[in-house]
Image 1 (tube, rainbow, N blue to C red):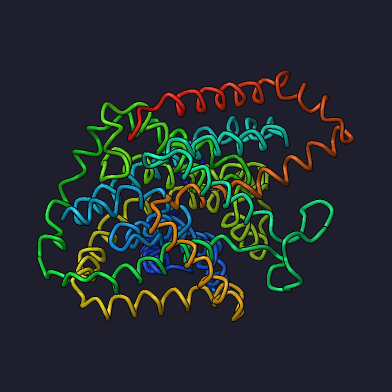
Image 2 (spheres, rainbow, N blue to C red):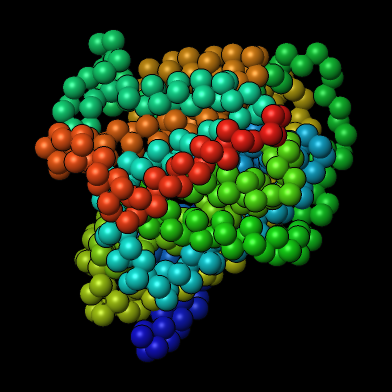
Amino acid sequence: MLEGLTIGFLTAVQPAMLIAVLLGVIGGVFIGMLPGLTSTMGVALLIPVTFAFPPEVGLALLGGIYLASTFSGSISAILLNIPGTPSAVATCQDGYPMTQQGRAGRAIGLSVYASCLGGLFSTLALLFLAPALSAFSLMLGAPEYFLLAVFGVTIIASLSEGDLLKSLLSGGLGLIVSVVGMHPMTGEMRLTFGMPSLYDGVPLVISLIGLYSVPEVISILSDRQARDADNTKSSFSGAFKTLRDVLADWLNLVRSSVIGTLVGIVPGAGSSIASFIAYDAAKRSSKTPEKFGHGSEEGLIAAETANNAVTGGSLVPLMTLGIPGNAVTAVLMGGLIIHGLAPGPMLFENTPNVAYGFIFSLFISNIFFVPVGLLIARYCVRVILLPKEILATAILALATIGAFAIRGQIGDVVMMTGIGFIGYMFSVFGVPRAPMVLGLVLGTMAESNLSRALTLVQGDAGTLLMQFVTRPFSLALVLLCALSIYFGLRKPKGA
């Protein structure tokens, strides 16, 4: 292994690799900032560009896009309350309130450094613990995946902003929307009303754009008070000095990194789930849980650390077993195959320069997006001083383009508008939107894995229930679900 590490390091520091990483990071920051352009889309669009490069250089470019776009979704989440990527939804909980309090620069600084450290942690895990972590992922089956989704649903209580009933209503609506379209096992159509655009369900990205963009546009235009061009609200002071504060919150940092890495290695779980689980864990262990949702730095650090820790974790099953951990790594796997490489253990044996070079390039990407992200965000933060008519028009235009770009269908723009109306009604009646997003993310995962688990036991619900308490990881998840519900019900009112 030592020889492979040496080869990988020397490969990663070659000028061509460093340039590829830098270009990938710059492109990834812009991709992640724009609602509708996800990490998956950015990597997929750039794969043809890598054909002209050696495999290690092409992978370094794609890796830079993946890491930087995962982080940069937080920029629009913090400044405009619009998550640039699904993983940035949890960041909205405290990032945007910090902007409203005149701490936009500090919020972005915390986000950058927390994302960097979370990414570095997961890359170290990928480098040294990949075989053990991949073995862990193989021990999980359909019952464990279903219970992991149920555990995510129990976090809804933690996301309630003073009214548990409203949060449950929001989460329940998200679960209902998640079952629209074709049943994952039987192919039966549900709640499509005969509309072909709903056959594949409601895409998560379109739901996010509608839920967060449209209400923000209406809020900006309906604000009867003139927007005060106060430079304190767009101040970037303090952003470069937040590393010490992130490191001071070391327990939250380590816990969120571990959560993100472990969730990342579970195929299909994703960074949205990781960021919410880490956010919930930080809130439960915080001495000031009442600040969460109102500009808590602990909550912001937890969400950002976890969603970037997923990146390294998601590459563990891909590089050791040839099993993609999420949609982005599935696209990366396609890129490897196109270059004539077979993902799996033989990748390290046959082409150590590619395998270890790619991992070391991820370390460099995590470091590069700190200065790049801070530099770009320094100027992006001025967007909150734009006249409200221009700002609202720009947000609506980006939302429309982003919704149309997903599948190239006008119906998706209409769908986005309808969901946006629901999001606006939520804001009017004080219903939190985050539980609905959680329901959307977890609904499909829970349904598909419950169907698989029932199929494996030939529809015998009793046998499946026994598996929940006899399989070690299933039992651990059942206990976590019970504890999460218990502490959620005991939560002080208004917390």
